[in-house]
Length: 261
Length: 261
Image 1 (spheres, rainbow over the protein chains, first blue to last red):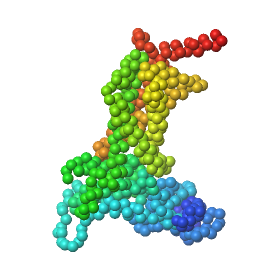
Image 2: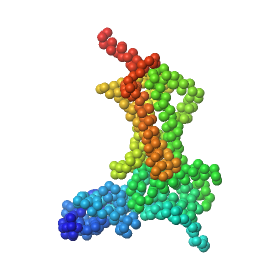
Image 3: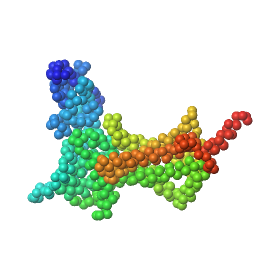
Image 4: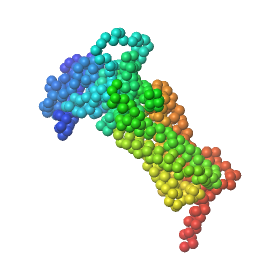
């Protein structure tokens, strides 16, 4: 095994990549296979970098290098999210030693819920629109001094922190059967943000405005309860708890909101 | 907040429609549709005691005041809405249980599959009995013999219609039990994962019980003996006419027929 981890032992990493040259060229959709030299601690990004160095398929055909997005390389930015061996995750934390310890073929595809840009790059604009839709921010217009914010207990902080770990990577919506072209569902991450900002002492001032947004088209009612989101979330955010909490708040508002106005 | 934003908060605002329809869909599934199914399966179980008690129960329902209003208002229209909107929901989903094989994702998928199966089964069942009753082709006191004959008719030794009923009841009851679980989630009754697990166990047991209640009657009609008859042996002493009596009467001419020529 020691020899395996040194360069030049002949150990190869076998990649099968789904490719497409541009969004308007669906006829260029194809699978290409590459075998690249193994490097110690290799992840899918460094495997793709090896492909980039010498983009030649296993059939010996020279092709354009595979393109992908990545930034932080430590699973906090979400840019390199893709479907690896049929499961959505970040390419940077997908270690070759773990997913293909015996040189198994690794299948790499772009996410399916977003418009394709090229090869493994997709346009996650819809997630940004979802966040705008649910007012995932705290209103501070900056025109005058507001003084220090309200004090917060360590307990509330502990509850809110895990919810704030979302990096908008898209794993939850990729695995969600309800997030697709037929629905306008805002997705688990956006509902989690509604809970997060509604729990914030300043954000709570606009709690009802946020609830109203998720009681509209594509709101919390579109959750199909498959609970895939929480299974795939790399940041282990309790997404199902958040959706259930927002559901409860929406139900309360449906049943009593109009009576109390 | 602006005037437009306030107008959006009205219960019947245009953008609130999807939310209200989805809530109505969830509510109608529990009551009246689901509640009626349980009542219906309970009434049907009187068939195990023979034709007279069954006819008495049927007559009691037939002579309910405002029967047509109740039938349409409390059963058929809610059922039609639930089924119609449910088909839309089933078509909207992008299924991925082959990739993400979790229990809840299976439940999500099966909820939609059993919904469609139950829709087909109930349409067939309504045509067979309620439709023929309305058309004057089947009097209420003919239900019992018709049920005995239809459901015990065999193709290559298999009571096909009886089996269809057992499967139809299984699909409907799964849809109901899992639907109750979903109702508790989406209305904010079960917010924590723990309460959701407990609800799953409770509704699981309830579902099995309702299925046994319904399937036993179908098995009785199909084979002439209920499950308890098969286990503990048949108890004599009742004067009521049973399926066995009815089938013997109707089969006599058939078996004598060829001899006469």
